[in-house]
Image 1 (cartoon, rainbow, N blue to C red):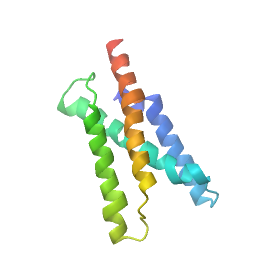
Image 2: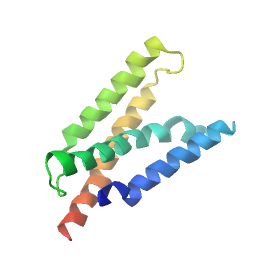
Image 3: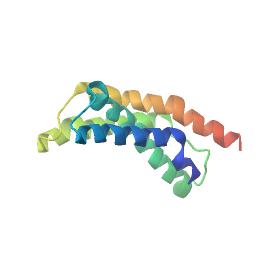
Length: 124
């Protein structure tokens, strides 16, 4: 489970907490409130599922998700939260910039986080 508490993942969680605390205190930070949580959504989901996958499914700590897995997560998240959920709840709104940030987050995870995990496993 060492991989779960990676510094980047902890950063995702802290950013999410800060943004939601600002929302709760009715002091949202405009650009961050709107898009940063969407940007870190795919990396956070990918990191949690990759930790589970490495530990219980492939049993290989060196395994990382290929780019098309991450793009699938972004596409699925986009469809669910930007197309389907707004049809059922007024809490959700469609925003194409959110879709862009989901995909940007998946590319960020692939480029920086996924490669970082691979290097740390090779170094041990």
